[in-house]
Image 1 (cartoon, rainbow, N blue to C red):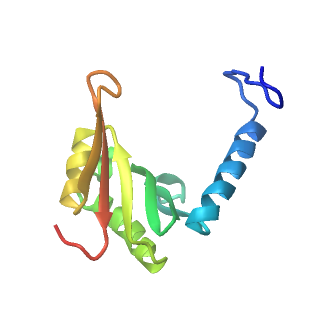
Image 2 (cartoon, rainbow, N blue to C red):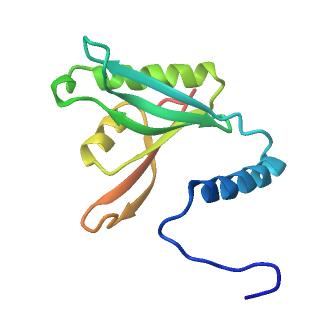
Amino acid sequence: MAAGYSIGLTDTPDPRDREAIARALLAHNASFLGPLDSRPLAVLLRDPDGGVIGGVWGRNALRWLFVEMVFVPEALRGRGVGAEVLGAAEAEARARGCLGVWLDTFSPSARDFYLKQGYEPFGEIGDYPPGHARYYLRKRFGESR
């Protein structure tokens, strides 16, 4: 142990520990990037009873929307619903002043869907998990493919 600190490993961290690291990192990043202006964004698909059955979940920060999750129930696929909810998220991102959207997926069919929506690949991790890949895609507003 060096003077002034110790290093500890755990697989059961306290959520307050994550908050402490995030708070310090966000303050450091804001010192040279400026304010993050982070806001959540959700486009929700609801069943007739009002229950959420899918949609888009993300957040904008630093003038980009990060789409964390997109889900369309099997029964609604192939009917333009995915393009509709993604388009609604993109429209709101534009209204918030975002430069574009980025996301990732493990699914080759989802990757193909995003390519059809005007997204372009910017990275891939092979064998993540083994035998599969994780795909990273982006769509910059104001540019056409």
